[in-house]
Image 1 (cartoon, protein in one colour):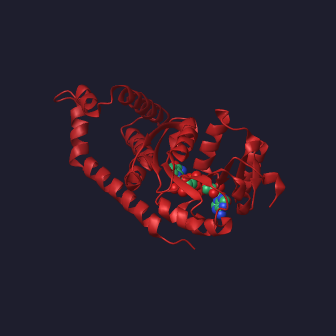
Image 2: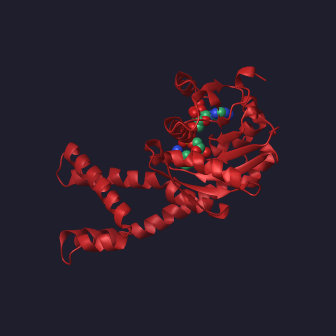
Image 3: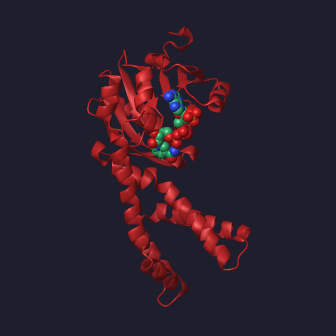
Length: 273
Ligand SMILES: NC(=O)c1ccc[n+]([C@@H]2O[C@H](COP(=O)([O-])OP(=O)(O)OC[C@H]3O[C@@H](n4cnc5c(N)ncnc54)[C@H](OP(=O)(O)O)[C@@H]3O)[C@@H](O)[C@H]2O)c1
């Protein structure tokens, strides 16, 4: 074992977009110093990035054996091979998985019973500290493991505790959720341009409308009331809403979430190569 990596408190197996957002949050909040963290990464660009911040980076997954808390930040499709490379954990470890689909019993089966697993499902707004992360206790996690996971995930936004059985639904709702909104923004901008506006004006109008409406939603927590307030009978909004309803917006969302949920279940049972 490389002595430089001994006694690291927190390890990351994969530290890309989401793992990286969490690491930035931890460093920003001063929860740990860079020298207390070890990242195992494949990407050369990310390796340079984290080294530049004073974080140790290794190519060897075995170095993570020294971590007391381990964040699993790789894609679910490569987890099996990454777990083989890491090997059974030799010392007691809080394992916080951000991977979609893969349940805690499969993670413990791969990393051994010294891995006490907490699952979390963050989302992209974590990159600006405004995420929402669901946290679920795995079968052998303790209160202290939960506290550790909560402390970590709180650095990038709000958290909510759920049962592990709900994680597929959470993934479909808030894990994938930002992309639904981004797709909507994209199509909304194109639709706005089709009504005769320039791209510059359409982008400003749509993005600020989403931003202000999200803030209103956040404050009032009443989407139905807010919609009714802006929809006067016989008015322009009513005409637009009627078209959205008739063209199946609600059904599309139901199907989108069900497809994402099913894919999460599949990812959990697929054996990666
Ligand atoms: N992105 C989201 O919005 C989001 C939301 C919720 C949950 N998640 C979960 O977060 C996890 C990571 O997603 P992501 O979007 O952050 O992916 P990502 O940006 O691709 O990050 C994964 C990182 O792991 C590296 N890697 C690949 N194989 C590795 C190995 N064997 N050992 C160590 N590092 C390895 C990758 O390097 P290369 O690029 O060189 O392969 C990459 O830098 C996934 O399990 C996903 O389900 C993501």
